[in-house]
Length: 139
Image 1: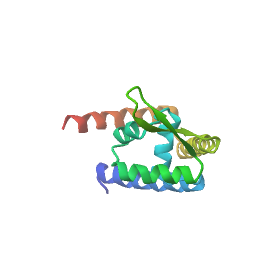
Image 2: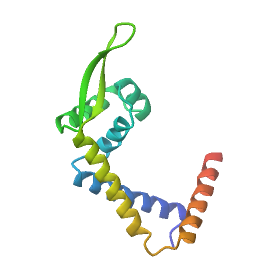
Image 3: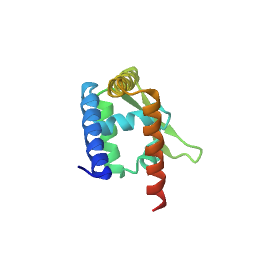
Image 4: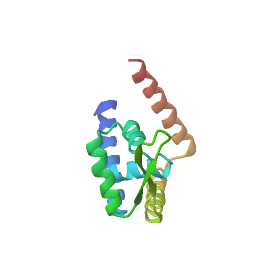
């Protein structure tokens, strides 16, 4: 029998594989989808995106360029109060549709995954996962 932590590693791998498949279905890589979510949420500058995602500027620039070429985002040149120019990114309708479809696909996956679980079992799992998370944070 696997240990609890080994089971969690397997579950994480399976969940990531499913997310990758869902993101590809929606024309995105997993990294592009996570970045697009932040842009849809209003994080619009490369500086803020780099800080939030903890990506280096080069990697972030490549991902933004891919989202631009897929027409999921637009880029607009702006100027701050000190006269410095910067780019602001916003989601296009295609980007919003991709995020909406992805969220819907994830919700369907979750519903299928827990379709045979009672609400009480789901709540118990959530309690145990929260407890495990707090234990790990304390270590």
